[in-house]
Amino acid sequence: MSVSHPSPATTLLSARSARSLPCAPLAVLGHDVQVPLASGEKVGYAALDYAASSPALQRVWDDVAAYAPYYGSVHRGAGYLSQLSTDLFEQSRRTVAEFLDLREGDQVVFTRATTDSLNLLASAVPAGTRVFAFETEHHAALLPWAHAGLEVDYLRAPRSRAEAVAVLDAALAGAPAGPKLLCVTGASNVTGELWPVAELTATAHRHGARVVLDAAQLAPHHRVSVRELDVDWIAFSGHKLYAPFGAGVLAGRTDWLDAADPYLAGGGATRTVAREVDGSVAVQWHTGPARHEAGSPNVIGAYAIASACRALTEAGFDALEARERQLVERLTAGLAEIPQVRVLSLFGATGDIQSAARVGVLSFVVQGWNSSHFSAALSAEYGIGVRDGLFCAHPLVRTLLGEESGVAPGPVSECGAPEPSLPGERSLNAIRVSFGAGTPDEHIERFLTAVRELVTDGAAWNYRNEGGRCVATVQIDRGRREG
Ligand SMILES: Cc1ncc(COP(=O)(O)O)c(C=O)c1O
Image 1 (tube, rainbow, N blue to C red):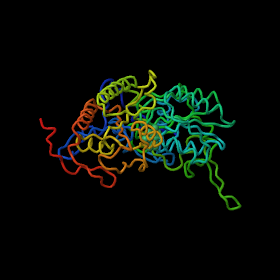
Image 2: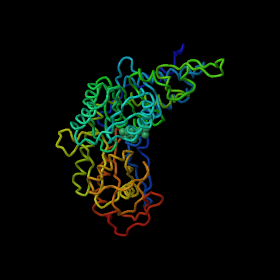
Image 3: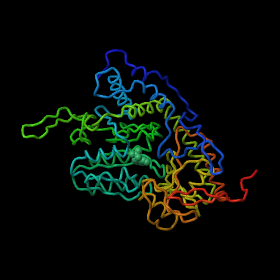
């Protein structure tokens, strides 16, 4: 639908001139938020948990605020603001298609997030499809396939990029005839390491398998071209791409999606619905994105993603990646100076020249520390927000932890919940530090100082496990940070 008179949507989309901030962090919300330490002092919050959810770009927030007064229903209203919102929603789709460098004929489906996107695809895969997934995947990429009743080959954790390609090649060579799908991540949410997506895709295609790329951790950090990588589908989340308004994306080939039953049944996905003489209801479903977008679309979420896509493109991925590389190098060099710290790596042990290639995501354990205790101290004593746990990638983290500690990890708590063990107990989980386009150098420096001090001097407070959370209780009287 196009509006007949000048649309504020056009103004909203074109008002911003290209803004390039090659060597400075992009402006994000929350950069000036003060949080209380255990001591009662306040300190600027160092958000180092971008891999879970990144802060909103100021630009995204401003764009959403500028649009908010014009908010209206999408695909279901005759009024001006409904037309405008429909326009904006569809323009957002085109912006995302450009951002991902989609091929002619590919489509963008707006979803809730990566988990939703991959479950949608799992529901649309033709019956009899065999799915291949490395056991190292995030649960969102590991679990939807069997859940949808498909046969899954879980591939063993490879210890180099070359081994990943070889393992896939062998698995596909031995697979029975029939449709096949590989689901692979672009960057690990645990180690941050980049996966050889183009090589894996070429291998998969050589065996007649299709590929869906889980770009949840890749798209916020790197330019992604679906055309160049040649993947068949790609999925990512708005809330990890500086656009936390409840939307995500599944983009790529139309054929399987158009042939499948709609992901959700409801309004918007239907062309016609009619009562039949036998009392049943006959439905003609749309093809295209609408088929899988039943219900009222999340126009603000979609528009926020489009805004983030434009902001990152205008800032320039070359500059963003260069800056992030500097921070990664500073972080890894700083941690390497602390012998008690063990950084978790899948590809790092092989001497592979690219083994260090990672986005701004890194997990580690600290000798003699429980990771929940350590993370709690980073927060309570330094105002630093990281994540501890198994990061919804239990098989991968348990493999890496087993190797690091020389012991098989025990039972684990629910995804997202800290493992309920006491300070000083052996660590059965890890600490993850992650950052991105909004991270100032100071956050990385403060983090390294904090790790060094905690390892050298110990925590300045006692901690107690309260409902699965490590909480600071009493200050230890050592005056260790005086002067
Ligand atoms: C690699 C990867 N894939 C998928 C997901 C799931 O994303 P969401 O929780 O936004 O659905 C995550 C989330 O952490 C992730 O890191």
